[in-house]
Length: 218
Image (tube, rainbow, N blue to C red; front, side, top):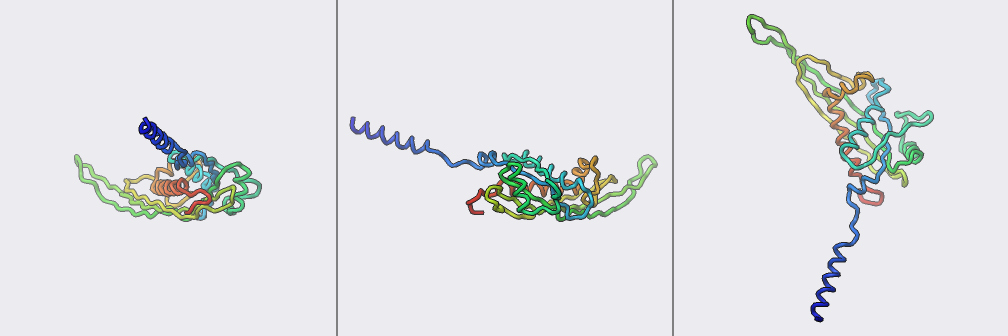
């Protein structure tokens, strides 16, 4: 009887130890984070005023799709512009709009190189024609900074790049960032330059999701 009682006590202790509180998992921790995303600055000098907000919304869509973080667009206040944003201003906007973290992004580079090669297609039923093959290689580089709103600490400052290439027969390509209009941004995203942008944003999203909590080592 005594041995049985001791065994039961030991089993109970093991059970209690196994059911103790566990540290929060990354997914649960991320789900509680409210992320504010500000319009991107355009360092390519494209002159397209809608570009920064469109890129920020594309990043927000990627964050929603790929992470448990809760993102939303932050509004610029007063005379603040995306090109003039700094960490202190971003943190202030984040506090005023009640988010935990705030992200500042810049499009540093967005370019594509194009080459054309023409030739005649084989004759079919006595008919032949000329075809032009267009080779496009695109690169986009983004700068991103993530801040913790409560502590004011910068969690990271990183650069990421995306690349895409495509060979097409004819068609329309975008050779510079911002060469699209507000009504053709979706078409731009289907171009090599747009796909390179989305690849860079996907990489940036991974870094946002894996950013350390305040007080943890980077």
